[in-house]
Length: 245
Length: 330
Image 1 (cartoon, chains in turn red, purple):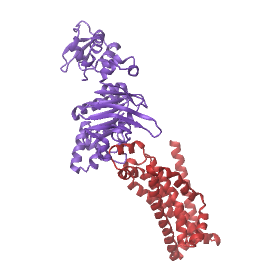
Image 2 (cartoon, chains in turn brown, purple):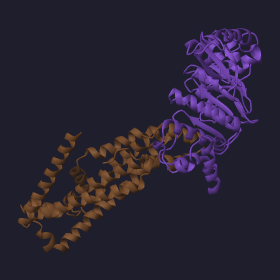
Image 3 (cartoon, chains in turn yellow, cyan):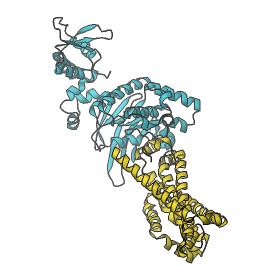
Image 4 (cartoon, chains in turn purple, blue):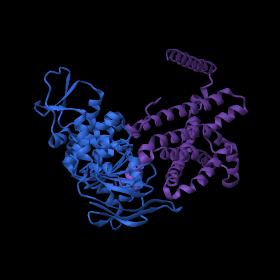
């Protein structure tokens, strides 16, 4: 136990050291300068990036959650494998290919990017919703029915609260992945911080590359943290998993 | 009162789980559905609150055909306790216990009062436990909460599906006693599923012994032990059924019929036993030879006499075997 603790301490110190070294290297080479010298463009790209993530994630939540809930109803059980496989299929196509495919349908621009990101977010959200509801002890539902709860009451008072940890974790995973994937929106002319990243790659300009990539990373970390806080607020105390990291 | 009239359950594939069951649970009685696994006891229980549909025949509750009632309203009038306690982890103890009153739209103050009263019944502090979550309680406490949750809206009928089956023997015994104590106060009409013969004998006013979905015998525990109707019943209760039947009688019963022997003051190695002790435990105490003489005392510690193995045997022979119908459960 103690040995493990020491090891994990050493690893975390090493990681922090590496991050520090990277930043010192980047700053000493003034790679972050574009953020300040072209702050207008930077803020514009950041706003685009956030819009891409927000719109696509919201759409995915609005679709994935109800579908996940519907599929776990008794009468729709049989449809589950069809829906699951369809959603899985969406995930198996490489993200670049999804983007390319969408160009031929929706053309170039924001809409195409949002659509591709939306498709990509569905699976984690849907799968965690179904898994969360499925993991609820069958006896609890039996007890609830036996006490005279209506199906809608069982859903909102028992199933959703007890599945909330899993559902929210699915949303968090999808959103964080989405922030990274949204950098590819540049490829279909969707804008976002990917513009600087790809510019950096094409011009062999580390400055553009890092000024685009690091804010994306920090954004992902920050949003992950925010959503964890939200989870802590929403998930009922009694149904939290015993060990939280 | 619950009446089963030719109640039958046939599944889609043609399997019959319950076949033409006929019996009546009298008001205020505990009837235990007993039998080997797969005998249809749980299915029969779940047909009462219509968690299972009734294929044929009927179940009447307080004179009303259960099929004529609204399913949701029917269930809210029937307490339901299951083996795995079924407490909702996302709700506090108080919210859990007050679910049915809440569904029925009770006022906040009524609910609080009822909750405290129920908690008092099981000897737990409502104040202390009300805000806690189920996982913070021990298995025994959770099961007790499960029982009072079923009692919350004061339903006339209760269904209990192996409610104490998951508990360890010592706690199970304690909670059984506690529940019988509560039952003396609340006098519910209870249908109780069990696979434990000892539990059935202890809890039941009457036992329904099932096999393959059919009733083998419906009788009081003592009658069933002493006069099994057929080979299955005889075998089910086993060769030691005479000894089992002793747990239905106390030393007091024995004293009233054949009396005790006088205390031999010269014997120093003695042990005392309370007069309301059941004869089965008394017998095992005698057989274990914990002391040379076992002295029976009453509530005030007065020595009433001594009990011996011979006396128990005599009682078993003359009383239980000869006049089984006179024996009533204390």
